Length: 470
Ligand code: ADP
Ligand code: GLC
Image (cartoon, rainbow, N blue to C red; front, side, top):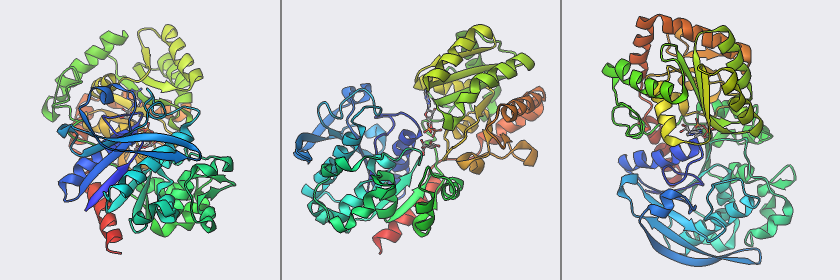
């Protein structure tokens, strides 16, 4: 069975967040369990793309309304990826330094989807399943079902995975002419609240819809940035499947990005070396418990509360905090300015730095995740694997993966995204850290938890099989 994953991100080709990690890992595991999974993404102007070996396998022209775009499909020649990967190259439109945040993102998403479908239709390279990820590829289920141009794909089952329903890719009807001719009786399948909504359309038209954790799928039916009613209506074809992690990339024993490798039996000395590096680099005290935050500085992650959490904690408690992230400019500024006030106790790197993130997972004692919304969350899974105790809010995938120490678990959990809840959890964490024997016992316990894709990869395959047998 051939599966084609279509996505705007895929590690290591292009990464903004967890979507990339999932699309860069799931296909590897699927290839180990009897299906052939490949990935197609846009070609961005980034280091990976500009340095990887590639071969052009197809070229054609597509139309966005009256505008024509010449595109080429490039196959990446890199066996280390663990799956076949293709990219859609379109000069100036897709080959830009960043993945998102351009004014014409809607156009870029549509052109990408049209190019993918045009390529597989014209070359008869038709997969058994097209697996779409998030709104960027959410129009594919509609396009294959209702556009004459893609008639050959009409019987190809589509699966949509919702990684984050906050972002839906809405566009107004004056862009309707971007789509190739389609059966106009079906126009309602594009619509949600009087605009074209790619995520809603994907939910309506995909044969199956998955979300990245069981709890998130339940939550979506109550709160999904306006799509809750639709998700309740489509309930029968929806399922939550917990994300896994790439246990090769995220393995403290062999991770080439960290300062000192370690395993369960050497976690104390290994972590210490990584912590020492962080403390030297950021000017922090190695003897205090170290708390880290890594992530997009957005409301969903509770990042707006970080400045207050830092102030409260460091005024009243004995610990240090390090933050790695970028996003909301106001939060970035506040986080930056606190470095003076709490010199020696707190520091930050504003920006994106893959290597530093690995060192932080390895070197901090606790990882903070006060998320308001967390569809799955991968940071807590990486933390566990690196022997770092997660402090999480009970929501989405965090609820499915972290159990509080008070309930025979291994993490520190709180109910609300509030300064009080997080500071109370930090206080509990410091208490745990003071009991080194207990803390170490937990470290050993969490490093053994298996969050690899092995389980979940099978769940996806069961879905694919049920669809191809229909
Ligand atoms: P989301 O996809 O919502 O951002 P996830 O927890 O699923 O959240 O995944 C986030 C991924 O992005 C993790 O691999 C995390 O380490 C990484 N990441 C987030 N921010 C940064 C950053 N500033 N620098 C390096 N890596 C980051
Ligand atoms: C999204 C979610 C995150 C999830 C990731 C991968 O970006 O915000 O919680 O882990 O996708 O599925």
